[in-house]
Amino acid sequence: MQRTQDREHATIDPAAARADGAVGGNGTPRSCYGVQVLVAGRRKQWRDEINGQIRRAGYSAITVDSAVDALTVLVLGLPVDVLVTDAELHGSLGLSELAAEARALRPNLGIVVACDSAVSDCADLVPADALLVPCPSEEEAVACSVREALAARAV
Image 1 (cartoon, rainbow, N blue to C red):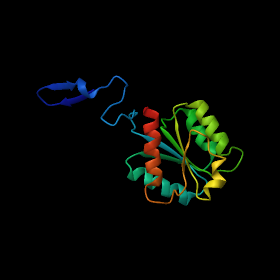
Image 2 (cartoon, rainbow, N blue to C red):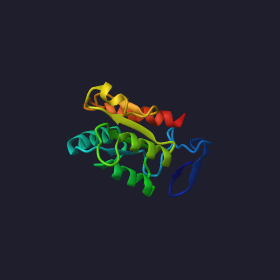
Image 3 (cartoon, rainbow, N blue to C red):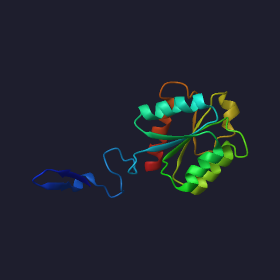
Image 4 (tube, rainbow, N blue to C red):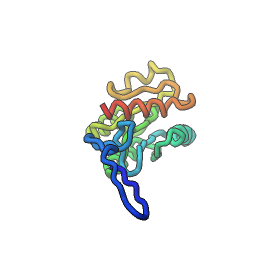
């Protein structure tokens, strides 16, 4: 529902409210924070570049430097609509484990995997339902994939 409040009277436009809970015309369900994107990557320069693409697209971003930190954000229940992760995540929790745990915690979470190296090297690590971005450094490549992930969630 949208409200317009004037000093003299207040009106409520029920046409703006939809049965599926989405507000607005784009069909993407949003929290009170807007669309939240969790960016997980081990290199700060990469995270900053992706964060810039996300923010230029009009979304909010939370950045972390490891899969464990990304999982912590999800476990704590912070609002996250899409997870963007670097295919080069290493450590005790790698990309495939992060994707599996994230999917178990939030079945409706969109997952985007950015791969700087050869796509063939990344393809076996990427979950079947995740989107793969082969050249994340291209302008707006990740933001376009985030839009696709949000659209897939809405269906």
